[in-house]
Length: 257
Image (cartoon, rainbow, N blue to C red; front, side, top):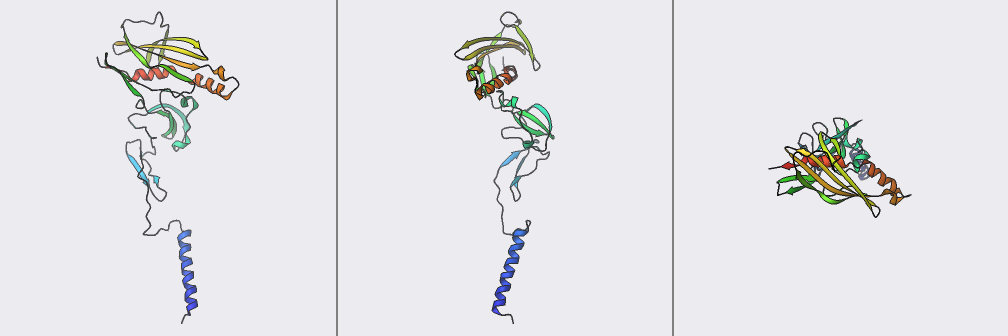
């Protein structure tokens, strides 16, 4: 016969062995234990969605391993640049500084086919403007994402010129931006520590000659002489690309008449 003391000791040993098996074996799980994950979803590049699963509630793998960032869909994101850096996931990619201050869209870097790419979510984030008299619509950013450059006359004013317009007179500069030819006028004035630039861009859209005009105010970086803001301002001025922004606006232009 086993004494009462021995029964107690054996019982304690059994409990300890069971507890040790539970905590030391990572694959052990109670049949009644339930793991609840949030109902988040991520969109994959093929348009499908994946949810969270598993003990750590991680997102399931996409068919080709790509998960688009929030706000980016297959219909609206555009590849701006393939940097060529090799990657396995989005966090391996860093957005180049030149894209962090450009106003035409909120750029972000993602991993596309194991190469880092800078992408833009198309024009869905821009506001639509309408000229009802001519039934012309276009999209442009409501504000600039820049720190030392500000909109003055904005959104751009649109006008339809005579089709025989040529790059003469006040429009002295002819330039190819993307695959479109523009006549460009820039007039600058200085006042109270700032420079005001008045812009005019003219290009043929369909069978109509369309003109955009607007003004921007640039802080004079020398205002911050000796301060960290001076180099920050100078860097922003150097990489801010008005031409690219205007070309994107022209791409959204629709004429119904």
